[in-house]
Image (cartoon, rainbow, N blue to C red):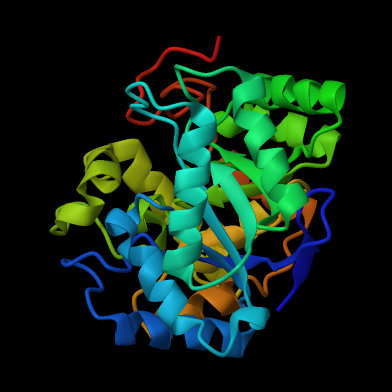
Length: 326
């Protein structure tokens, strides 16, 4: 397993990470023992980066991870997220304190390696976001801070605020990015590359589309419907997937290997966050990072799956709505 530095921090994360939004979900992995088997397999094959959020399964994902890491906490780099949506009179500072203490209890730990704001907020300033996070770093409850679903300009604005006050800066940026969803290329990835910010792509397989298991007409499970449904009905997407599968096969790999390795060929990417429900899926994900793709190979894949710079929004907003930070 290869490891990369997360931004300008001292954290070295495995290039394949574990996404845990399935943990604690009654329709996915309701049994903590199954989550533990997945986590232990990750650690055994060298995957040390585990990503969760306070909102995943209403906190149960964190609870499952806390149970799984008993006796092995030092082997893992644990990332979680909080949000500032629906404050309803609560101060941002009080929300952060409330959320971090809850996550520490759920995770059964006295520190969080990477603490991330989950979505851009509509209600608070950069100072109100960053000051309490800096205090958590100073207290040792959080080692490194990051953001999720910010645009590049918003992250740059946060960095300027941190520099002005001498506060900890966001060392990572987590965003939706795969071969079929490339809005991050517009300005977020160039910013991360220039500013030495570790980029963490989520949904790397487009809900399973890039595993090749969904072909036109194949039934789609409820959990994959949002991402896969539109692609499955798109003739161009179906044709592109076929070409990607063929290219991967010519190089002795699967389309899953291609999807992960294409992401890892970007210099800003620190770790690809990949979900897994079984030990077998963990093994497949871990091996997918073995293809050390050249720039020429990545360019060839870009030519197979070109993107015209159109489509969905650049930023993803949470429950707080779509207005920017003031």
